[in-house]
Length: 199
Image 1 (cartoon, rainbow, N blue to C red):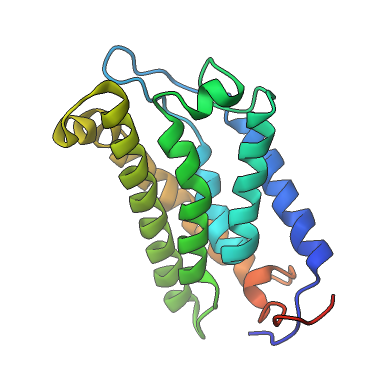
Image 2: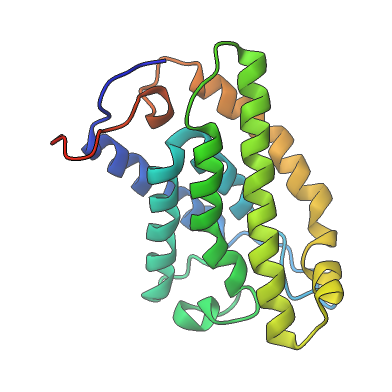
């Protein structure tokens, strides 16, 4: 592991890059009507990567940038609505969960263990926590929006997506581990800036 202050400019650039990636891929959606109002997207895939590669600070920032882009009206969300209508719609809970999921998942993955095997376990735990956060917030929001019981919210807002989200994790994990062990200067490979230290 490195022990050097991570340049803020590089972290911001990476956060903006991930925001751009999720913005470009999010409109790619597979609707599951009438089973559920929640479509299949690649959003969670990039939440995984943001947490495991950018760490808590810049991973969460990338998702905040993404939400801001959508809030101002850019067509970056997976639904058919834009702006605040999408944020306050039935899938808004999932969107608001992304920064929190990247933050908490990033805390798990922010330090690289001594071995690749250990790193794979750490990245996998980061993905699992991120996914649980997305489901928890998204399902509660969805159930409240449609006046469903929590059980019915889980059935319509989580159960159909578990196999695919686990598949996304299986694909994202080796990518994340490979990049974390590469020569790329990622936030997770540095100690991060100390409070009050100028960059």
